[in-house]
Image 1 (cartoon, helix red, strand yellow):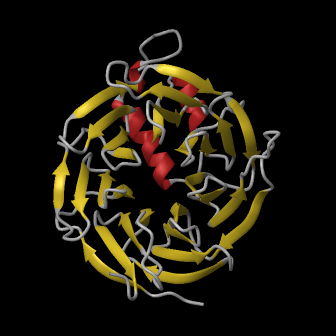
Image 2 (spheres, rainbow, N blue to C red; image 1 turned 30 degrees about the vertical axis):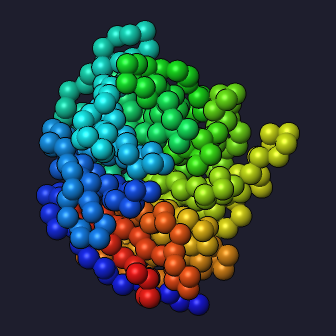
Length: 355
């Protein structure tokens, strides 16, 4: 089986540097973050920018949007985490993780160290970034995720653990709990399950940890990949977790919990076909398809049941981020997705026949 995805349109005002993250929201808008330090909200029909923030000094590396599509959480290269209200355009909270450390001491390395770290992380083979940051004494946030239930957000980075923070305006950023992995690796990516009960974290060494938030314990740990895991995507029912890695593969994990709390059967499928790092992935709202973006300058759509690629789209540069439209597709169509890459463009794609 093969599917055809058509290029619908591009964003009307491109970023001036690479797009490092995109998210198609339940409000049917799209958010994008960039190495140019900006975050933009787009109208999905026209491709026009409907709202944006003034540029930060350094790039924005992580993005998470709440289920209503009304709030966006993002994190900059130096570890500044902000909560942006998409209705009134105001920042409701900000937290400087680079200025916090265990014991309350300030740990702000110089900008040149951060630039080296991001260059190494984004362009070079995976290295032990955790060791470098630990040497600096830093607990700097890299990836962030809003809890769908509200009230808190998760972060991971140099500590190799997941920290749960307050997402409430008066106490934004305050630590509520630490979920310990027991490994001194760099936390590359974290993402809450749609039901808000768990958070998954991946490392630069290819490990994946699934934490139960209520008990602050590890529910499952996987070593499915040989290299850094760049992206994670949950199925809508919170039963499956898809990982995208620098080892050129995507791996599907069964993470369903039994009544006893034991995790599911683990890796159940491998998707191979990219010729370079897989940088981003997402699962369609109906759970039938997955999309992936790669440094090989292609976007692939995968049939999860058939364990096979059903569409390959050649792009002009590395595809850094992908996101499915959360609205269920029309009958007889495969839906739509959005991509962002090194050329600074946000691109919309729809399956043939989709409106």
